[in-house]
Image (cartoon, rainbow, N blue to C red; front, side):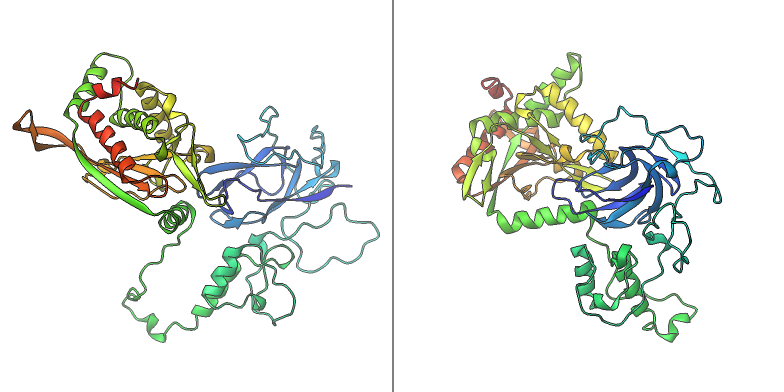
Length: 460
């Protein structure tokens, strides 16, 4: 006898608690194989495809595209067993135990070809469970139904309505839903959830808010002139990537006693050295790659800045390798891809890795592993046409080097006034891991290498 299994949004790792449905890859009625990707979701870190650990017929989907779901919320239901397959399909039913895999690219077996097939129209002996639950229970029949009814999907559920307040726990999984209700004075006990088994979803709370706001609209709203913008202004939800960035920056300011020092440096010789490298042939070397190579050499001299603070054990942990993050502006917002093992790379290798990660970032294709594990960050905000800044440390790192624009300025060179290519360098550091002398020594070494790249040859 077929069995209906519920597949819930899995733990996506990296401390992520929710994801937004970007695109469904299957329809109700499709036949799916074990580990076949069924939905594309966007987290605060990346876009990933989620594979289903069961094989069978999709009987229901939960959540429309654009819906935000917490980890553990139902995604879809699958009818597993021979009775769920179309006649003459020739495909063997998948095991009900599932694969146990979570994400494509993170342990999922791609060796099995994805199978997708539409079931026969209603009325066929092999017709699967309908996508929506019937309005009323079916009367008892002599023969049992071939498949137990699946929970009603969100799309087919009626709008939430106020019900009498009842005792007992409130059926809410997501803490975000609770907070949304609490902030707006909504009593969750007065709502009927549209999720499975009465689960209250975010859409239920939002619908209740819209219903509460509708009667408050003044009768004059029907005037010919459009309604003016309210004093509250436009509201933009802090969620997804923007919310993750806000949380990390706020945590950095709360936990890290940071300080900033800066210096102007003559980058004329550095720019000339880069031009000579690129004129010699081979892959082009970027300015960012040269600055990154200087940073890794400086961190070898001042390892205090390649560390983190373990608050649980009250210890400073000096890290053995440099995993260099770099700030990249994309259409989704600011992201910080990480070059793993940057201290073992040449300027040419760093250029290639920066280019690869930047292309993935702009296409929204960075994996969570590409955005985590950094030990030091290089922020080239000069691309925005500004000279200086006070960078906020990328928690839980201990320091960040900021680089302003490189522009011609009057400069004393060789005892005479000349026009030189000048850049401002800013170092923000965690004052718990070192004092100003160490931070100043690091920044001075970086500036010396910028002004005279031959200084760097001593550490190569």
